[in-house]
Amino acid sequence: MAPIIQIRGLSKVYVQDVIGTEHGRLKIRLKDRRRVALENLDLDVEEGQIFGLLGPNGAGKTTTIKILMGLHFQTAGTATMMGRPLGDNAVKGQIGFLPENPFFYDYLTGEEFLNFYGQLYGMTGAARRKRIPELLDLVGLSKAANIPLRGYSKGMLQRAGLAQALLNDPRLVILDEPQSGLDPFGRKEVRDIILRLKEQGKTVMFSSHILADAEMICDRVAILHLGRLIAEGHLSELLSTRIDEYEVQMRNPAADLLAFVHKAAHKVVDSKGDHFASFKAERDALEVTRRLASGEGTLMAYVPRRESLEDYFIREIEGKRAQERAQVGKENAT
Ligand SMILES: Nc1ncnc2c1ncn2[C@@H]1O[C@H](COP(=O)(O)OP(=O)(O)OP(=O)(O)O)[C@@H](O)[C@H]1O
Ligand SMILES: [Mg+2]
Image (cartoon, rainbow, N blue to C red):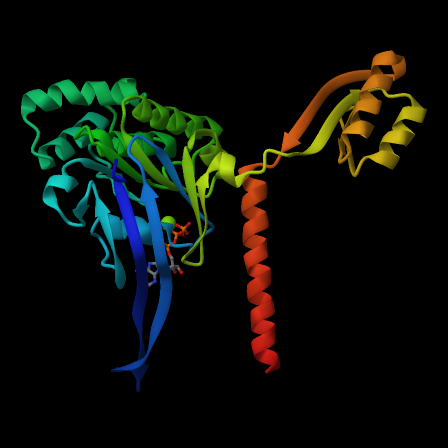
C-alpha cells in the first residue's frame, strides 16, 4: 500500500528582510536574512500508524507540517498525501489539523466553538447535532460544553482544539505539539485520544519534544535537528534493546553491604531512608539483591533499564552538536 504521506527532498528557506531606518523615517533594506528551516527531507508515513515528528526547538517540525497543510510553500522538493499532490481539495476534506498555537474565540462555549467549525466544514445541522456530543465525550468535555472557552484551563482548550480537528471524521490527523503545556494528566488524556484514533483505523502524525509521550504510543518516529533528518524508524529499530543499567532500591542495608554498593555502583542516591544504586554489571546488582535476600537489608525494587528514547535523542543530538563544533573549529583554524 502506498504511504499516506510521502515527502521527497523537501526544503524550506525562509527569507526575511531586515528593515532599518535612516534619519528616523526613511526605511531602507539592510539585508536578507536567510534561514534554512528544512533541508532535503524524505519521509514516508504509512496508513494506520501513529507517527511522531520529533526534534528540539527550531528543528523544522512546524515548518514540515505547515508545508503539508498548504500554509507555507516549500523552496524545493515534493510531497503527496493520499497519493495526491499538496493542495488537493478532496484530500483536505479528509484531514484534521491542530495547529501549534490555535486561536480560540473565547466568548464561545465549547459547544458553540465546535458548532462554528462544523458550519465551516459544511456539516448539516443534523450531522453537527450527532457528531458534537460524541466528540465532547471523546475529549472529556461533555460537562464543560456550555462554559465559555475563557473559563477553560490550558488542557481543556487543547482538548477542545483536538475535538475541532476531528469534526470531519478525518482519515489523517495532523497535530502540532498536541501535548505542549499540559501536565502529566493532560498529556495522558491526549495520548489516550490518539490511541483511540488509531483503534478506529486513523493515521495520526504529531510533533513533540516530549519524548516519553512519543515513546509510549508511536509506531514510528523521525528525529529532526536543524532542519535535517537525523534518524527515522520503528522505536524497536532505533533503541538498543540491550539493557545498559541495573537499578537496585534497598532499605536499611548493613554497613558492609552499603560499602560494597558504594564501591561497585556508578551512582548511588539516598532519598527518604532508601538507597537507589545503579550498576553497569548485572553480576554486581545480583550480588546486592542476594545479600539483601539473606538478611542484610530489604530489597525494595530491582529494575533492569534499557535505553529510552530520551537517552537516544540526547546521544544523537549531542553527537551532531559535537560534530558541528569540530567543523566550525576546523574552519576557523584555516
Ligand atoms: N515564518 C518564519 N520566518 C522566518 N524563519 C522562520 C519562520 N518560521 C520558522 N522559522 C525558522 O525556521 C526554523 C524551524 O522552525 P520551526 O518552527 O519549523 O521549528 P519547530 O521544530 O517547530 O520548533 P518548536 O519546537 O520551537 O516549535 C527555526 O530556525 C525558525 O526560527
Ligand atoms: Mg513548532
